Image (cartoon, rainbow, N blue to C red; front, top):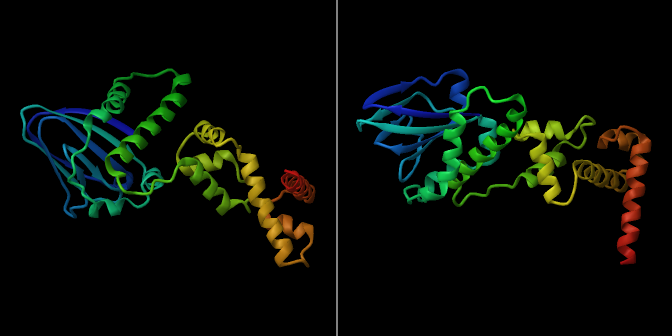
Length: 255
């Protein structure tokens, strides 16, 4: 994740996207002046007025500024973070990309980017907070500009999906999940709180459901085998999860 705030005269600038930079997605916002952005493969997405998206794995980029003074803001994201926000961004190419964007609504977000670019040596205790806010700002800008008509999965649903795909991993943790989603642990925890749940409960439920299904489909399996297959660290953990499930079922029946 990186921000940039650049003032350029009339010029032509070649951006050689190699190695790590080629894997980045970059949004460019033309604040003042006139800029033309092009690539050999013509993969750039555009929203009027003056918002460009260079997707990951795009080749070299040419910036041509034609006004005497040109102000640009750049927001770059890793390909993995980009994919979690707009997994089906290519559909944007078929969806009215020339429709005019409400740039007024973007001003507070862009103001944060400019302010972040002007920070010099922030205190260590500020870094985590700034990183979280910066991720949220980048996410909001990307969705606002290029998420129209797309199905953008909320973080809590992405967390649920990740758990459902990885519950068999006995080392599955909120830290691993946050790293996969390219957000902070605190951001995941807040999303879970808003959904009135917690990470442990979601993992336990995914493993318990899998264990119940195994008991039903393969009754010859021992508890040790079921526990191993479903990610439980021990038979006692499996027994506790099953007992909790039965208690919850009894409470539902009573209601």
